[in-house]
Length: 364
Image (cartoon, rainbow, N blue to C red):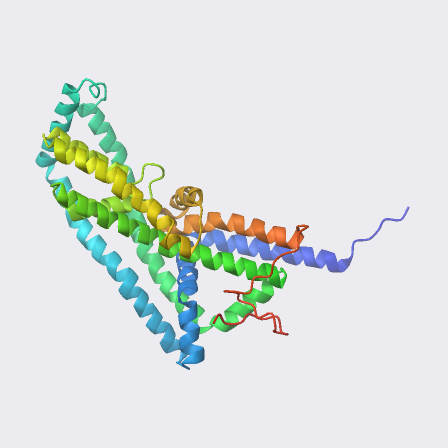
């Protein structure tokens, strides 16, 4: 009985794929700490891509000079504000922690209000419960410090990688384009969706947080709370918290006002938070963020959870991006192997359908 022999070419191809995957896994596991930096470089490259090609192809600028200019812009508009934010927040947090008497006085006023209220008296606000909550919160301090250090290291990695991506942009895109084993229609769709996702997450999420923080800060100032800027920044950061979001800041603030006899301001702040601060999210999603990219809120919520678990603070942007890749790959799979005829999308495509060399073209 004769057995059909496997083609040597197929065996060689499988072995080569296995070796490539094994090396990629080794590289990935060894450099996982720097992965957010590489993802950050890719994100910045997508954002600067059109500007880079305009400077180097149309204006005929030197590639190295154009790359350095874009990196300087990144430092000014991204690293600079981040440094100022940390420089402002650290003394504020230190002052709050060091002034224990004032903190305990404010907490006691809330505790007394809860105790006297028939509806809130069952909530445990004893010193034992407070110490337990503080001990749980203290466990996150090393993670936060590590995340801050990780952010600094990965920002340097991102800028370093970004320089070489911008300098070798054309060759890089041609290599990636030729390596993707899909049809032109699928490659065009893949780029369109990826470009939309990057812009929506990298620009949309910070815009949403900043707008809610500003609106909240104005509300805190109007209703007489101390340190409205500090509370506004906390509100902006809290937008990443799934389901609860900004409520974790403005509701306790309203409760503090209520416990201190400022019932009018407390009710006003609570209504302001629910109606105004909460509405900003929906308004921006259906206006500005809709133009950047129609990303489903569930992808944002669970993407943030995924990103925080994988990358810490840097996962706020990259988590939703990774999760969005699943829907993109499913769409590409439908184009490649589905029964329907795919629609070729030419706008924002890396490809030039008229090209005979099957290489990417520059977006106009």
